[in-house]
Image (cartoon, rainbow, N blue to C red; front, side, top):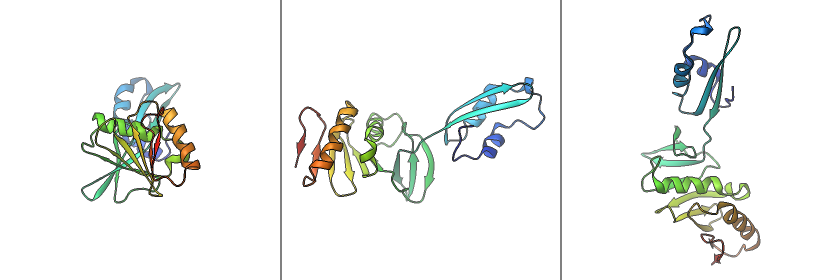
Length: 186
């Protein structure tokens, strides 16, 4: 199936195909569309497996950030799609602060690309991601340090440099890796 958080029974129910329904008459595109009505799913593939099995493979959306709005917290994936709404920010998810938190907004898209680009050894320390422009993404770390990441360009270089600096330069409180060729510490 490919599902970890969405129960198989929910997917089966959303598919809307009754038990013992003739497999040959199932409209696969319709079933796929209904299954994708579950917002936690990024994709679904529906196939017939003869003689009588309907196979549904899904890929779940992965939460990458939280957006605080109206006393609630929207959990979003890498494209800015709301996966679910919670009452509090889940542990290890950074809070995203952008002016227009809507999928497709260039600033939000850049900030989410940066969130996904942060190396694993740093990702758990990121508490907040702020962006006023697509080239002005800033990370606030749990230990009080701040990182000016800049835009989503050159993510591997920026990530490698940042991880190294955070280990070596512990006295700095501000790291500017927006241009990996000229890194600044304060």
